[in-house]
Length: 208
Image (tube, rainbow, N blue to C red; front, side, top):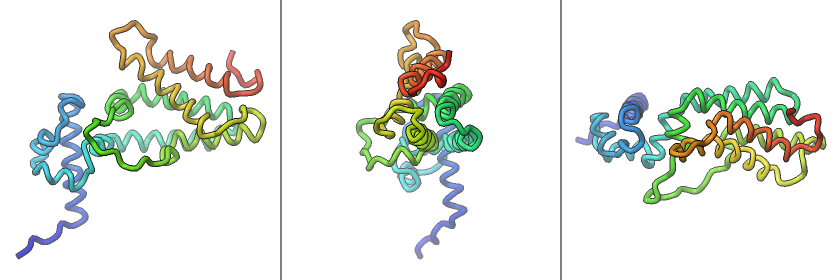
C-alpha cells in the first residue's frame, strides 16, 4: 500500500526542520559547513528530501534569512510612505540599507555577500523589482526625473548604480579584511553622498 501523501502542515514542518538545521550549522560552522549531508544529518532526514523542498543550497540559504528580509521590506515601505521628496527618499532608503546591514551582519555575510557556487545551475534571472529596495529606488528616480531633480538617463541603470555603490562599500571591508580599509558604515555613508551629488541636478539637495 502506498504511503499517504504528506499534509500541507507536515510539509511545512519538514521544511522548517531543514531550515532550522541549516541555520544551526551556519551559526557554528559558517557557510563553509553547509553541505547537503551536514544539513540532512542535523535535520534527521535523507539528503534527497532536502531537494524536495529547496532547489539547491543557495535556495536553502536564502530561506534562512526570510525573517530579516521581510522586516527590511517593511522598513522600505515606511520610508516610501513618509518621505515625499524623491531625493531625500533615495538618501533614506540607502541609509536604511546600511543600518539594516549593520543590525544583521549574519544576513549581510551569509546572504547578500554569498556567491553562488559555479557548479550550481543558474535559473532564469528574476527582475530586481521583486525586491523592496530596488523597486523603491527606481520609483524615486523616476519621480525625481519627472520633477527635474534627478539627471536624465535609464532609471534601471541609475537604480543599479545606487544599489551597487552602497552594497560594494559595505562588502569591500569584509572581502578585503586583511587591508586597512575604512569601516563599511563610514564608507557607505560617503558613497551615498557621492552618488547623490552625481545624480541630482541642484545644489540644494546635496549634503554639505
